[in-house]
Structure formats: C-alpha cells, structure tokens
Length: 301
Image (cartoon, rainbow, N blue to C red):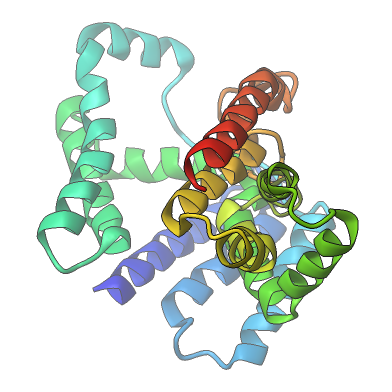
C-alpha cells in the first residue's frame, strides 16, 4: 500500500512538472520543471532504479537548486480578495479538511495494519476530496494551488529526506562512537548531571546541524545515551529516550535546516524575515531544554 502512496505522490509531482514546462510566465520553467520531474521519478520508480542512478538524480537536483535554476510562475489561482470573500462565507468549515489529515492518519494507523505513512496518504486524499466538496472547487484548482505552494517552498521540500539519509550515513560511519570518546575525555567520571547535560544539549546541537531530531537521536543516543546514561549510570532507558528526543525537538525550533517547520511556514506566510519563525521560538526552546535536563536528572536515575 505504501508503494502506491509513493507512486501517487510521484504522479502529482509529474503533473506539477508538466504545468511548469507549459508556464510561459515562469522565466525559469525549464529548471523548475526538471527539478519536479526528477523528484517525481524517484517516487514512482525508486524501488526499481539502481542506487547509483538515484545518486546521480540527487546530484542533479542539488545542481538545479544551488544554481538558481528554479523560480515561480503564474498559477491561475484565486486572488487575495476572492479568498477573503470565500473565507467570510465558509468560516470555520475551512478547518475541517485540515483536521481530517491528523485525525485520519491516527485512526488508520491505530485501527488498521496499513501504518502511519499509508494512513497519512489516504487521509490527505480524503481531505482534498472533502475540501473540494466544501469549497465547490474543481480538481484543477487544487492542482494549481498545490503547484503554487510547492514552488513557494522550492528545493526545501526535499530537505527532510536528505537530512534523514545524512543521519543514517553518520551513524554507519561511526560518528556515535566518536562522540562517546570525546565526551568521556571531556567529562570527569561519576558526574551524572554533567553527562545528562551533555546528552540533552548534544541532542539539541546535533539536531540544529542536521535539522532532524530522528537522525540526531541515532547518533547521540548511540554515543552518549546508551553507553553512559543507561549502561554506566543505570538510567531508565524509556525516560532517557523520550526526554532525549524532546531535547532534539528543541533544536528543531532553532534551525533553518528543519525546513518543514521553520523555512516552509515563513515562505507560505510570505514573511519579510525568513528567520522570523526561528527567532520567536528561541526562548521557548531554551526553557524546554532546561526543563528536559531537570526531568531526566530527577526521574531517570
């Protein structure tokens, strides 16, 4: 089932690509169209394409993004005035499709054997259909608006996949073991609080660098959490793992590398300062980090 979700996503990206190639208002339509075309092919044929070919395609995506070959065009969507008028009529009904996505994802993952990712795909399709019914729009409107949004996000749309792969490579390269050796050299033995701080702050900082708490978790927990806090100090692995991941999320609030959380909202809201979201999250993130250290030190040992 999950493979069908990937293929559906790929077909949508191919539709965006075709629209872009035909968009004469976009001066960079060739580069933008190629980007979404290549990206869509990886979703549709990813399981069949040799790994080295996928690697070449990733390099091509990087070249298109870094070379400034992507741009925005004309999308045939409604104007701001038309959106405001529609919103004044529909009011809170507009939130129903948005609520269907998380509720549907949880329900499908809990009560079926399909899993969370498949549930997310199915719930998203249901939300689109419901949104079209509520707004009485045509499917092409949804396609046009989707292309406008993804062009606004740009290359950052694929950053989460890059970062997840980077975390896997770091772990395979033994970065976790290296981190453990550095921590042991810098921190005196039998100083539990310092080790807890090193783990929580390490999770935060590594997430800032990688933009992905899951990727950071594999490295820092392998290097500090398990060998030092769990094995050496006999800590509760469940509490350490949960609080450690939450410390990583503190780093997510502080980095533009976490594009889905910080860069994308700024782009969609058309904020003048693209880092405004991060600036508003600095103080809450640091307060949460301090609280995490207190909870881990107080209740995990």
